Length: 151
Image (cartoon, rainbow, N blue to C red; front, side):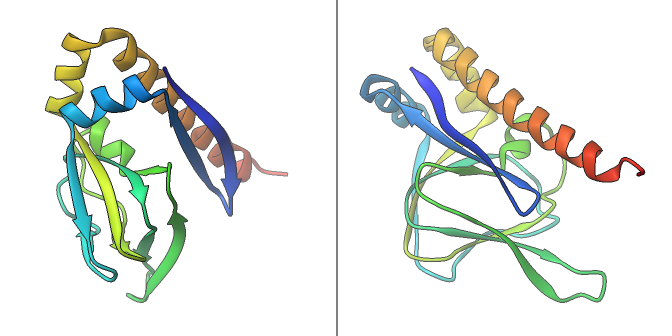
């Protein structure tokens, strides 16, 4: 089963913590690529083509955006059990932030082709992943609308 244990607002960014039963996690491991990064390694840069999302197995990831003045600003820290780059799994748009390993990092990279394979081999799991992604994105959209609504 794929589920989320927590969806929380962290300074305007929604963090989703994924929870997998052992069998579901093993299935996910078979269709994704396990990657290891040393602390400080750039995983992707703002503006890079997006090709998937990442699920943190161990370690942390710093999400960084450039300010209008060109300075790098850390906007979020992603921890074990959380994901980042979800839009890259769903739409073909350049990355809107950079991701840098905040510590030694192990993560699973889930690409669109991997999700298609999951859809064929374990459709129930793929459906539940889509539900979690949709919920996360809907929460982010609602929060964005709330802060943009005039008083």
